[in-house]
Image (cartoon, rainbow, N blue to C red; front, side, top):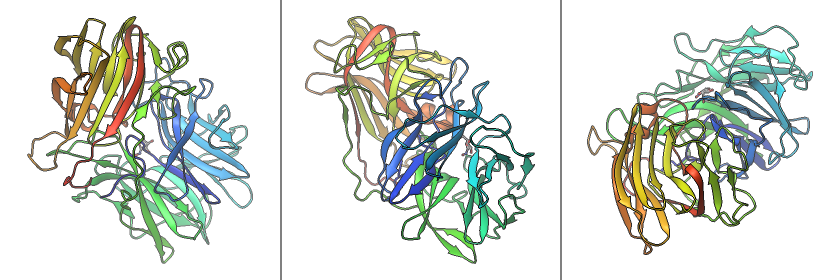
Length: 493
Ligand code: 6LW
């Protein structure tokens, strides 16, 4: 049982520790607010404390922030009494951005722009003289003034990773003992992904590769967690070292499909001959707290786990207009549209149930499982009828239509994971779209193979997000339930 420490689409983890407290940040791509931030005392249990980029002045994703564009891999560090977060917004005109905060729960500053950092996956490290080194994918490095964003020297290539391996990226530079260590990911973020390391006596190199590289990979193994890579290191107060990394839980037959995106896992690190040795991924299921199933929309604001597409103007998405309800006002007619009004949360479990009570008196809206604008399934309602819809690549179809049942309208989606290796051609899961009556009895309008909402089919860097949307007029939601369903005897679960 090797659960992620952060389940669902939480890739590219970066971690730092201050005293007893650990903080972790992840990529967020086209979603707003961006860069979710988590806190933990034990590395196994994490609480989301906010999203670093929660103001339009920090995060511009419109008009051209395509899906799997937007915000890529952040680095989170604590230095000189402040938290520093550096990341790339690949939306045109943005680039590398640096933010600071005294409290990681926010507020975070407006961005300092870094026009001279010419690559994604920026890292920050300070040397003993106070020089700040920004190292990025490739692997390049430039000295910067982190207060102004200006380069203080020319960029240099400092390592190319393992000869023949593609995509040396995700660098993190650390001073540990007598060496500077340069950790990278390579092999691409698919099944060949791995972590390698080099060391030198200066932050600028030259760097000597570890003879045991890659120090972590699950490629060509039957480990249930695949695509492992993009890691960061942290030392515990007791002196032990740990690695956070991304990995995927692929399901179904061959070639295997992962639907929850790239998730964050934890592994122990020991040292031998001055090199890190990575142990097996830590099983973290034991002691997992019971899930917080219902969002009642009774607080003044949405919980930080709620994310929208590209922006979230308060007029179109709020919990204040009708207290106790989430109100969504339509900007576009379908989830195919980049600017649809949507609010959701990550699907975090292979099997789960999602339901919501919708009021369609003034509009049309629904409940959806979304991978991107070309890959989504939804159950959509007006006051008169309910429809099950699917968009798969260029194809869009209405699967079934029914009159709206009497009483409160509860839209429901059930996701049931497939037992691995049941059939070589079986998909990762089944997604059922339906309604629930007042006794909670579920009626499916459609049952779909979940593979079409997987990264292997859709492409890109994200995972499924489940949520609600408005397609016409104003639609309101009284509550939203997300409930994991535990399945047994499923390898890796
Ligand atoms: C990220 C790169 C990667 O910038 O995928 O897995 C890219 N690694 O380092 C997007 O997450």
